[in-house]
Amino acid sequence: ALLGYGATVASFLGAIHWGLVMRDGRAQPLMPWFWGVVPSLVGWMALLLDPAPGLVLMAALLWACFLVDRVLYPRYQLQSWLPMRLWLTLVASLSCLIAAAALPW
Image (cartoon, rainbow, N blue to C red):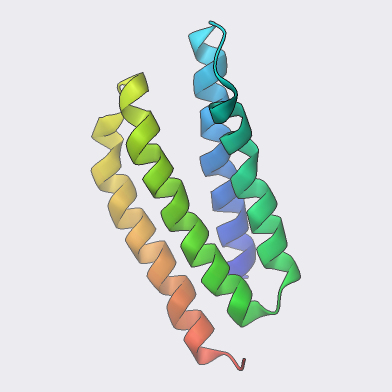
């Protein structure tokens, strides 16, 4: 269940970038469009793995989403969300890693 929830959250985090690019209305570089689908695809891959490695991949993906957002959010004047995102990423990724440690490899 935690892995499925993580994949859903990661998909949402990627989709935010499409929304931001579409809101802007101007021609945009391909990077935000590309990044918008990467979390969904990696989350899907994590779901295909055994649970323990899938949870580790999910934790890494959540941090990758945060790091990308640290670069891109200021372009849209959204940097005020980053402190909350840091805490949510920390809690979610630790939850994934603790669950992975409790599972057989």
